[in-house]
Image (cartoon, rainbow, N blue to C red; front, side, top):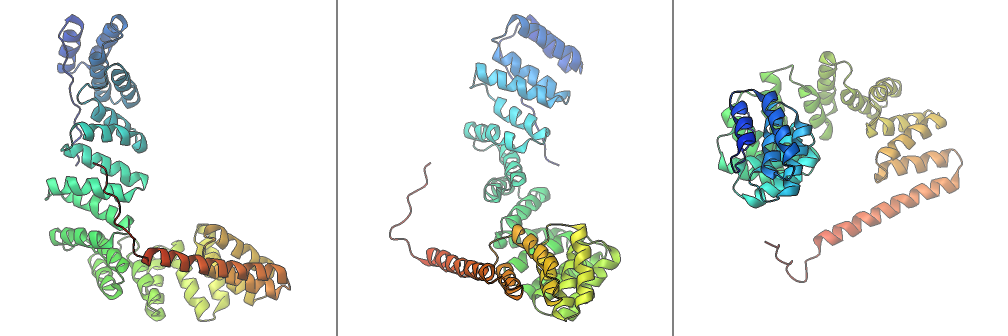
Amino acid sequence: MLLLILLPVAFAQSTGPDQAMALEQQGKLPEAEQEWHRWLAANPKDAAAYASLGVVLSKENKYAEAAKAYRQALALNGDLPGIQLNLGLAEFKQNKFHDAIEPFRAALKAEPQNQQAHTLLGLCYYTSGDFAKAIEHLSVASNADPNNVELHNLLAQSCLSGKKFDCALNEFKWLASRDPDSPSVHILLGQALDGLKRTDDAIAEFQMAAKADPNAANVFFGLGFLYWKTGRYDEATEHFEKQLSVDPDNPEALTYLGDVELKRNNLEKAVTLLSRAVRLRQDIRLAYLDLGAVYTTQKRYDDALHALEQAEKLDPAQIDVHFRLGTLYKEMGKSAESQKEFAKIHDLQKKAEDDLADRMSSPKSPPPASPN
């Protein structure tokens, strides 16, 4: 487990603070809190007293009040040691990860080698979806504590979520060496290998996960998806059905099994599976896209239009949905709308070409050095 440390604050001794700290040491936290409040009523400019009140409030799990006390301390004296870290901890313990980032950054600026601050800042960035910064800080913490499995796992998850697949592969390999029978590690290692386009290796990892624990979450769906990607639809069907045998309401398995049935031209079976998927989850684009294709074939044009509009809302930058909409409008006799959708395809293709050209062009001069 991560060790969360509240730092004590030193200040000139006097009767009120002496009594408050004695009560705190005796475990009499409510009495210590009251003593600090009495002291601060008479000494409202005592920054260290606010900081110490924050420590007591944190020990009482009153994190919102503790954060307020720490901020008051910093407003009076921004140079008090340890307060930024304690403020970050108070916000972190409230799951206010975004609010904890700046205090942890300030704590690291004051003490760059503080591994606790690196770890907690990495966690905050991870929960905020800034995986590049999470990797930066968790790498520092992991290097400082190389045998800490939890840190390696957090770093591996950050690398995977940030699509840094080489980084994820290295971390998951290390985790697998420590626990070779862990199905979750094999699943995550498989995801990293899939990101590196090593699909056969990814399949092997998922097979090991399924052997270690057939009830591991989504293990059969993962195998089915990898087979689906490679066009091995019989194997994909087998594993999607295995997933549904243990989790009948798995919307992803229903969707991809429905897609296989569409590819086999089993339209009614595809509609049954896909309709069930979208009732369970409304954010799976492929399910709506495939329903639109089936309904268009069946000349259920209103249903097709509704499904394809849902798919477009989920990701308007995908060419396939505009192609299907263009085809649908053409069949409905709406030439202007059809031409508009096909024009969108041309624009999206042009943008993809422009983006590739931008990425492949060599810089005329080296980038400026990063500021220290």
